[in-house]
Length: 168
Image (cartoon, rainbow, N blue to C red; front, side, top):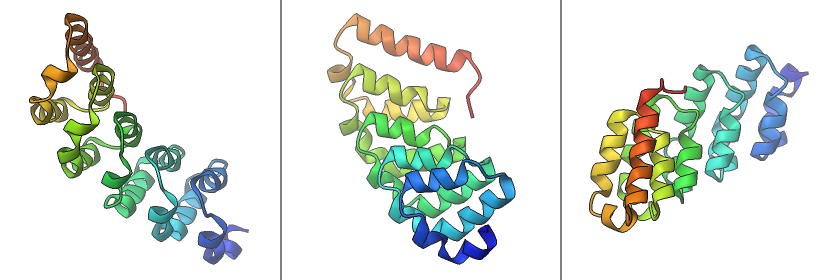
């Protein structure tokens, strides 16, 4: 069935829910075929960071890389909030996270408005990326960290994040 419909898949799969429904029950080889058939349409059907995460969720690391490469130019424009940033980075490798951070660095300070926003971002980053985000946001930190509780929350987030192995 997949072979017969391969050429029609980009017309059949028009949003991320459909993409997820098609990929979820498939093993690796058919999943690769669907990804390859739909690769050019992914930037059009992925409209939000949650869409991007939903597409990556059932995929292997190799297929996630393929999807990332197909969509990487669009990723900075679909990140609107700290939640979007965290959601988008969740399934990405360290190098991919670094690329997203670099592409989105000028928007970082304006998207981090609260201690919770700051902590959400820090939880999804590797140590070097956390350092870069902190440097990028250093002028805004006094506005974000207003109390000793805020400061403590960030310290606990960083400590918890780097006391345990990274989830990938």
